[in-house]
Amino acid sequence: MTLQNSPRAAGQGSRGHKTRNEALASPALPEEPRQVSDGTRDEVVSAIANRLTDHDLNIRSPQWEDSHYFKITNTPGVMSDLTISDIGFVEWEYRLCDAGRAHPAHFADLVTGLLGGAGEHCGGPARRYPDLTLRSTVVRVLTQRGMRALVPSVYRDDVIGEVYSEIEVTNPARPARGRVLLADDNSVRWECHVSGIAAGGIQGIGPEEIAETIARALIAGHEG
Image (tube, rainbow, N blue to C red; front, side, top):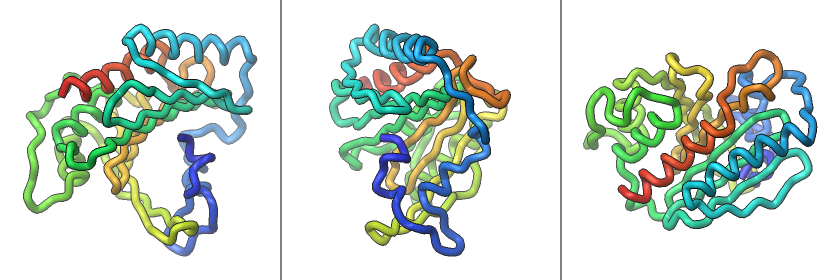
């Protein structure tokens, strides 16, 4: 689900922390995004939905006022939500239902694929490091594969009284692929833009490529 509709969006941040609302003020988003016509938006949404169903992925799609939301339902053990806004911003969230299935190789390959890395296992296979958390291990492997990781952003949830963090990962060789955010609960969020819709000169990728990327990630995870 999008950040705007997350319970974590409520509340005010304390010094040194950010709330979800503050996190949305990312420089990756245009300051004055332009709205697109219903025809253009519907074409993008249809292209992504059709390509996902081509891969036998079932989707539910309640429409919101300023965005379109997909829930992919036939991926056992995985929560998979996709949101496409009217300004061409795409957000896909991936979360394993069973934390026991989490493994560095799975997450490293997932992020590499989302960011357009040159092959799933470029830079060597992922392995566990006894002195590192799963997320830290994934980040180490990704940097070995040429990805760039930024220091964690820390947020405070005033509703449930918890602090959490996200590490931002990008691919310098493929900036149009956007960014992946790795949370401390091992959830993964991919953010990018649809080419031809995003304003402010922001680079994007085509709707079919977005759908193919998500489908490959889900199919590879299911087969693994």
